Length: 246
Image (cartoon, rainbow, N blue to C red; front, side, top):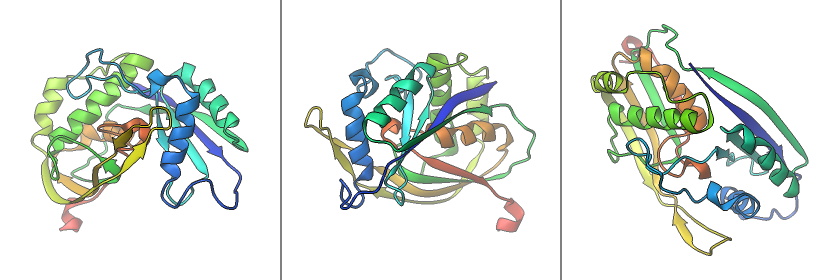
């Protein structure tokens, strides 16, 4: 059982001045791509789906580093979206574009894990507010990856959703340091303003985490929560030894 996708990195030449203000790189590139790509890629239509995913996920997510505003990264989950995205980036003036296929195993590797640190790098919205229980986080990760596979890959996850969800409730939230951030973007297509609020920071969980680790590591690439296509919901997952962490 795997998750396959394509990783694209587009490099743009430096200009003086830059075409966007400090901290506005994400909004700038999102807007430019929004003018070149099909509208339905940015405007989900309700078709039903797993809990928390009534709107189908878009076939890609943007990754634009704050410290490298001229590097536009895209993780693409649909094969037929790869070339249109590359063509759009070239039209925007990309100097070079690198792309490579990535395949992640979603199977339990047997790596014993009892401590897990999850960092929300970009604003993330999850049910549970500022202190999300592990089963809430895992449910959103599980449903998102399963839906991406169902729409663009090899089909829904071949796991017992209910049983894993029940076991996830036994994992304990031991530390939570999150803060709410306010952000917004303006659509160049419609002129509307959209909120991009969410939480950033770190949570630490303890418990029998081994079986959940492959899906959580895959979520580093897919993102989790709402508006991931814009770069929200980017997480980083680290394991730690519980005894030495005390």
